[in-house]
Length: 346
Ligand SMILES: Nc1ncnc2c1ncn2[C@@H]1O[C@H](COP(=O)(O)OP(=O)(O)O)[C@@H](O)[C@H]1O
Image (cartoon, rainbow, N blue to C red; front, side, top):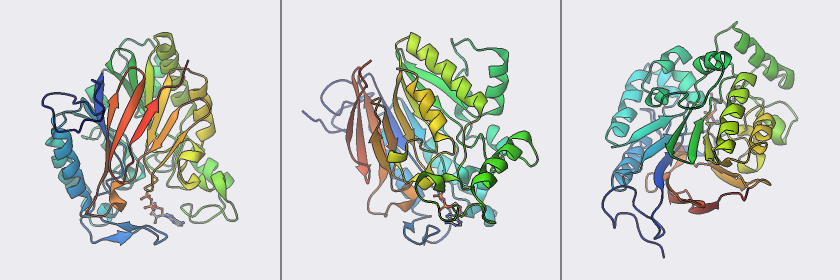
């Protein structure tokens, strides 16, 4: 029997009648800018730049009535247009004011628009660095090289309750955005792009390519070997401890969960790490504003959240996830569909 949110008081209200172990909120691609409505590059989708902060406000109001244990913000919080208007810091202040009304922790990942507005160094010491909320390594022992890799990469993990873990990934670890020329990672990223994309404008997908090859564009990025090896260690620990892991990233990694132009460059390598561990139950991403979903052959749920920026003012796009011992129940608002996600059998 379904019970509506808002009919209960106190923490972590139930949605399906059973008491969840914990509850979290999820929202993607707010992309606020203090400019008139516009459209995406191909002029196929309308973008509601000013109104997106109102939709964020409404999401926070909703969550304040439920008291989730935490919220994950999937990146592209403010639009790159702010940079042109010298409004980046102010725009960030405006959206963070909404989040600050939220009586819970917010976990942020970074998308391409974070790097249009700010340098990686700025982001590391900004309010968008939520890694500081968690002790980065807690009880998982890693070697000194992994410590160094963790410091250069914005990724971390946390366990909100025993047997569950969340891993936030840095999808622009390999990227020409946010990596300084001519650093090793910048050069490596430019080479990956230019080997696959011969256009002058690297935001323009490779000529004549369709399907997943379109992903080699400048507004995407990928995961370094160090980050994947770090992820592998966390998942090994999680396997041993019979944990259920949800992975959070700006870029999706399964071609059936997104328009392939939005995929991470080395999505196959990420999938191969995920599939070598039994602990992974869900992968959540943003970036593709149309959203998407696919349960892969190993039973991992790939959820791509609809973007707030392309959501008309009379609706919304966010979700609350009720986590149970055997499933997650995702309750969408507005453009986001409800979904029951059973964990893969081990
Ligand atoms: N097909 C394309 N050709 C050239 N530039 C593009 C193309 N698609 C997107 N871009 C540019 O790439 C950047 C990111 O695109 P955008 O649609 O804003 O991505 P997002 O969905 O992350 O907002 C923008 O500067 C946009 O103008």
